[in-house]
Image (cartoon, rainbow, N blue to C red; front, side):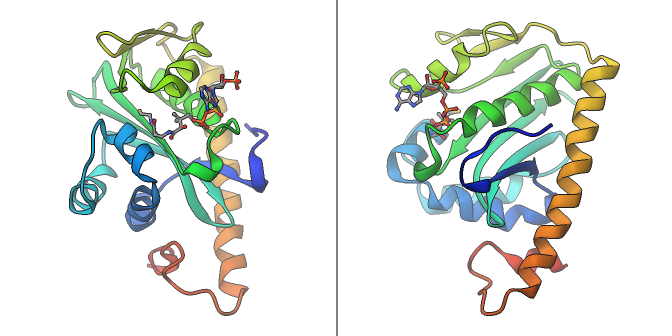
Length: 204
Ligand SMILES: CC(C)(COP(=O)(O)OP(=O)(O)OC[C@H]1O[C@@H](n2cnc3c(N)ncnc32)[C@H](O)[C@@H]1OP(=O)(O)O)[C@@H](O)C(=O)NCCC(=O)NCCS
């Protein structure tokens, strides 16, 4: 599954070993975006605490990468064990990459992942003044009925189909190949410091 993304970016799943990259991305969010993402003003310490625990079993994070740097993410977190029918979704795009369709592309992937996991209800904590997120959710009317009062979206077609599973597998296969190429390219580039996106994490 290939989306038309700005700045030659790509979308792929974020691996557990990339928690450092996820943290760096969340810390780079500007004040307003951080407030929108976390539902209020939160400190760096809170973001750090959150990121340390966010990648793991029951969570699928899709990332938007530009030049190997994570610039956007969509988190799908199921609750209630392996048979969970409910999940929470949260999106974060760094300011420079907002309003270029990245949120739409990430939500498409997240809904596919939710569907393939049999999720029926998707919770999205969204501040009332977050027009862009509301607009974005409206674009997915056919797949997601969204009630901003109770912030619960119902995934209209929750059951996985062979096609929906294949689409996710194909996207993952493509992502893995691109991610490996990305690591190799970055290893060959001289003078890249580890602070720009946790290259060291990839090598472990
Ligand atoms: C909300 C957010 C995820 C949206 O992602 P995005 O990449 O900026 O959104 P998109 O470019 O895909 O645009 C989605 C829709 O929003 C609308 N939109 C875009 N920019 C907008 C703006 N500045 N104001 C209002 N609506 C806007 C458009 O109608 C667009 O639909 P279209 O493609 O049919 O025109 C992103 O801006 C973000 O991370 N914001 C900060 C954190 C946040 O609010 N997270 C959500 C809490 S879960």
